[in-house]
Structures are given as C-alpha cells and as structure tokens.
Image (cartoon, rainbow, N blue to C red; front, side, top):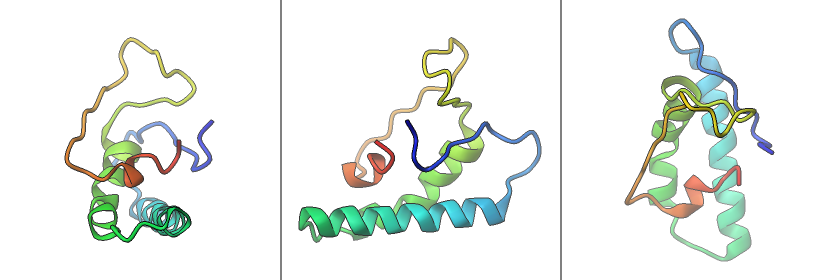
Length: 89
C-alpha cells in the first residue's frame, strides 16, 4: 500500500506542480515522523526530498501495482537517512 499515491512516469516532461506538491507532502511526513521518533536529524532527510521525489515520480520506471515486474527500474541509494527513504513504508 502506498499512502502517498505513486503513479507511472509521464510520457512528457515533468509536471512541476505535481512534483512540488509531492515533495511538500514528503517533507511534512519526514518532519512528522522525525518528531514522533524524537529524532533531531532533519537536515539530511529534508535535503534529499527533491531528488527522491523526481526520481520516484518522474525518472524511475516503477509501478506500485506491479512491484515484481521484470522491466521495472531498480534503484540503490546510499548515504541518505532512512527516515526519508521510508516515508511511504
């Protein structure tokens, strides 16, 4: 289940309004979850939200309805706080 609502990559250029709105939602999730966990390490999480947003909703070929699809893109991201990566987990 993906509460943030991932969609397939658009055929045309990026929908900047959508990406900005999605990044703002993710920032809110990061801040809320960080507060709930009592963590103070927000800078590294918030600094990568734009990159993760564009990658997930525009660049990568990911379909949450078909997580085992043969032709899906796979991504490995390191050195980024797990809070930002687990926003929709």
